[in-house]
Image (cartoon, rainbow, N blue to C red; front, side, top):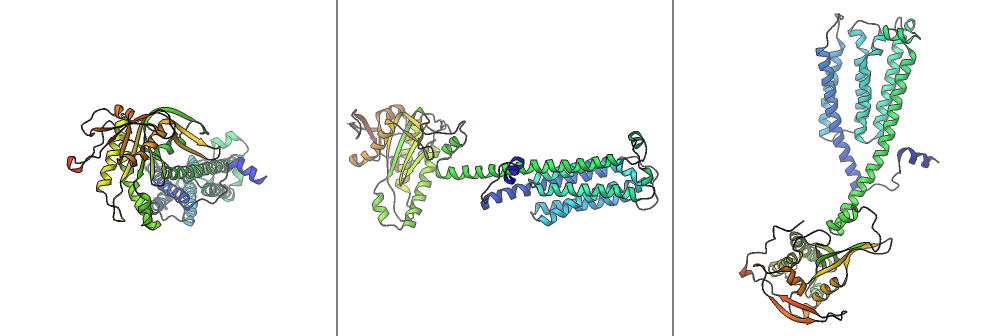
Length: 459
């Protein structure tokens, strides 16, 4: 029953302990909020001082004028608090004292009015300055911590009770109590019901704000957790796929997909098993991280998306997840750039890694496959299978880049693309229809400086 009521009032609770990084993100947000609160409080005390300075003065006592002292004390306190906020040195104890001091100094300022203007104590009960109490209470909502809202509201309610009690205790206080509302408005008389209304309003506003902030805090925690989860997801799948999944209009289900005309490229490291035997698991992981970092930079530069990793192999798409103009041309340029890396990059284990590429263009399907509880977002179709088969056929031809006639025709003639070598019609394993295959030799380093990314790549 208690948990049900809590969920009704404050929203769904997060049952598990928040990870340290989520707590850190929330604390950072709260620290930034305290800076904003400090500046608003500085603005308020400046407004108080300005109004006091320009307000016409009536006959005052010849003694100490408490208003300038109260304003000066509050100004110094606000500056100190703002400095601590920028140093992230505001502790829970200091924040609690700060909230109490905010309300306390405001109450002292209100209390001082009857001395300043030589009026009965009931005079300050009608001061419009009491409205600033609600500003101070609402300021605490910026922190997303209902405790300080309740502390501010509770302090304000107690403070106003004390101010009302002082009026009743002071000389002539009780004799000034009235039940006539008109008399209350037109004189220094006291209407007890009006003061009770103010206290009730302070308490209810504090409670409503605390509930609203608690609900917002729980939503904020879920939002921060989801944002971090999405950020982590983008490290395990491509950012483009992660963005597509997280921003889908509807929950993605098995079989959801769309047909697109795109270019698919499969890559694989030549002799990877032999290299793996010579390295420890840690050395192998280091080498692969270096390799994928290098190749990913090239793939991204030409608008490609790594749709799937499988060991040392990659499935790369162009114009499938994100739109890419001249996707076939960009795929060929990516393959050539990867070959350039293979010729120049020496990895941590002291050797080079040659990469075989199989490329095909045509209609494919991109979407989710799997079960309801576990899905893989990938591309599939006959043209994807052809690209995979071409990558392995590089072994047979002693080549490193094989592409279908469809890709070569879509690519067109460009000065930075070497001449293609026809390899004849090949019946790819698993298909009955023969596929015309062409190979291209990597550009010798003496013939070029580097493969440049086209300006028209759409990202």
